[in-house]
Image (cartoon, rainbow, N blue to C red; front, side):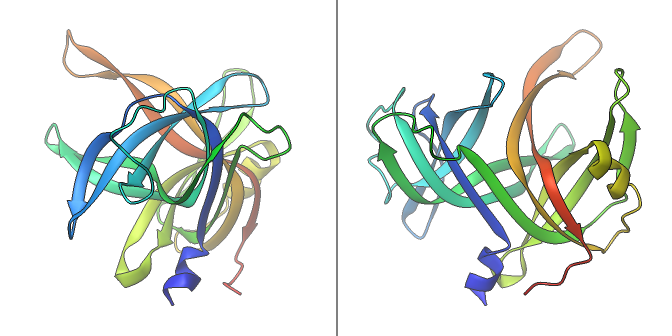
Length: 211
């Protein structure tokens, strides 16, 4: 059952390590650490993607900034309570990690496949340049009754298709994880630069059942 659910959330990423390892938490004596990876887009820009890595996969006391890694895992979420409300925090939970000599252009650098349920009505809108987009929040089941809540964004004809999706509908998507900077207003005078993460959808199937 656990393996079946893990198949509903698969991520493969290759990029350059961009930070030191910072401890997140510990479970039954196993330490988990956060590290950022820079992943190139076809346009030449980069996404900064946070990874959660077990100390049993890599020596977290060493610095690997600038080194390339390839990882497989799942896109996970949890709610962090701050400023009197919950904030959805996203990262890639790493199951396999391999160091590679350099960026291999034959390998896809950023792939994600999710199979889950729509948990709020899609938000359909137009960009200032007239492009259709639709925002979807997808609930993806984990073992032991837990779920991850993953923001997804559809473009063009996929956005037009997605605007009719119903809450509770089953959705299978393929795409890439992207990062986006925004300014959070903390008070009348204070702001803070933050990074949001979402899945940019390239292909989707609605109403499919798990095979």
